[in-house]
Amino acid sequence: MNKHIILLPGDGIGREIVESAVQVLKAVAGEFGHTFTMEEHAIGGDAVDKFGTPLPDTTVKACRNADAILLGAVGGPKWDGVPADRRPEKGLLGIRKALGLFANLRPVKGFPSLLHASPLKESVIEGSDILIIRELTGGLYFGTPSERRDNGNAVVDTLAYQREEMERIIDKAFQSARLRRRHLTSVDKANVLESSRLWREIVEEKKQDYPDVAVEHLLVDAAAMKLITNPNQFDVMVTENMFGDILSDEASVLTGSLGMLPSASIRSDGTGLYEPVHGSAPDIAGQGMANPLGTILSAALMLRHSFGMETEAAAIERAVRECLDQGYRTADLDTQGGQVTGTQQVTDAVVENLTVKSVSDSICGM
Ligand code: NAD
Ligand code: IPM
Ligand code: MN
Image 1 (cartoon, rainbow, N blue to C red):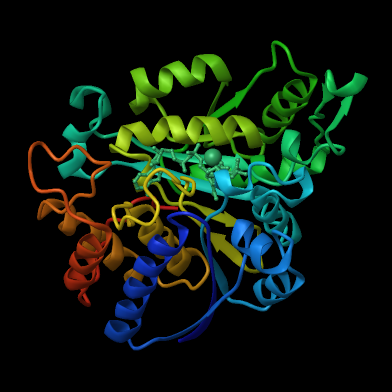
Image 2 (cartoon, rainbow, N blue to C red):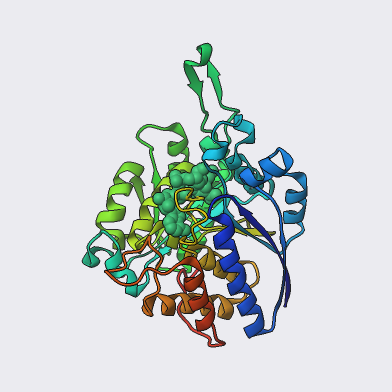
């Protein structure tokens, strides 16, 4: 197959980890006889520096015409002082909104050889396999423009949702649960927020359409606790934008590092955007020590969800598992006194392990 991929490396470690994923995609193309053309565009602070805006029109246009998009990360201290509408993060929020990518899938499943790498007990995390589904284009992130009042001493951020925006993400979650263990946990703050009460009503309505899926409601504070005390109770979790942002970073602890988590930002049809869950990690940028696996696994999600290449996606996931089994680890992972390897060595190991072998297990099974 011929596919056109837009690369948005962004800032900080973004360029290093996207470069790793490109090497893996090239290896997949070679092994499986595909042609992936790749074209880089600017986003975030990189785009602010080059074009004075975090999301140039040329970037949006290229993304609209692509088969899929791979993004590194945006943001960093260099741009902390710029006006709110030119912050690097606005570029990421803008491209998600422009492409209507309302569903963010964040699979959280540890690799066997990293069981010990989590600060949580192995007996607690063993067997955990969660799909967090985060609403991505509404809520607090996209309310009426935030403002300061009273000489800067009062602030307004608004949390707004339309029923339809809630319905489509809740439907997506039920459908995903059907493809997995048929258990859906809806996370909200219905004891306080009106938006959460509407969310809960819609989940109750929708569950009539999916009688084969078991549904539970959890308040977000309790969900945060249960996620790390008994992660095995979860299959699919669905929640609004900001709760999903926070819970997914927390859930990454199950896998040993935030650097391990991939994500897919999608809609029912059209171009998908694939990005690791973590940020631009300014504290380690430019040192060749970033964990590339979250981005490499995001490339696997791209192959599966946007290109229908299940065998190729599973081959990447297997190559990552083997690389970890062989002992390759960046410094963010517990190395148990072993050798710390850099971004390029880990990438080389994944590329080396890639061969044409179809496997049935995948990390998310969506
Ligand atoms: P972060 O995710 O960048 O880093 C948090 C911690 O995790 C840091 O100690 C970092 O070194 C470590 N880390 C993250 N990814 C890693 C990797 N691949 N390998 C090894 N270690 C890794 O979050 P932050 O420090 O709060 O934010 C830094 C900047 O990134 C901010 O500007 C923020 O807005 C931005 N950010 C961007 C995205 C994105 O582009 N999707 C996501 C989150 C944060
Ligand atoms: C993420 C990030 C972004 C978010 C920021 C950088 C806008 O934290 O993708 O999780 O909050 O959505
Ligand atoms: Mn986040």
